[in-house]
Image (cartoon, rainbow, N blue to C red; front, side):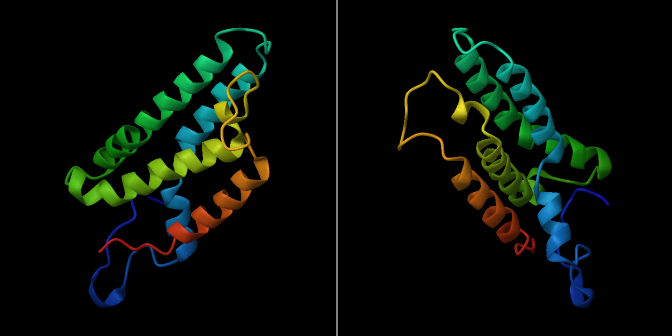
Length: 143
């Protein structure tokens, strides 16, 4: 299954005909997996290590920037006619999806030794937002 969510094609509708297929394509699975692997390594570092939290946030920032760049290059390799304008909606949705997934997985948000914001990290909230966002974005069909 190609990763690009394509626009509708006349009367036949979209080539990505199901909500579930579109929802799956909007999630940057490769980037989320790389982030999870990186965070798993950081989770093994002692909590008193002073670089642990800053490296966690640095990894989050790098993967956040990497998400649209990686997906753009992936789509460009599959379809040389792909343009930034054509791909923009999917790249934005996927980048937001990365943030949602990173929060749900814990990432630097759940690391001990950092300031508490809005009452601190809530694993259950990440799970709820993850489910709602992933299902909701499947409703979007590019025109």
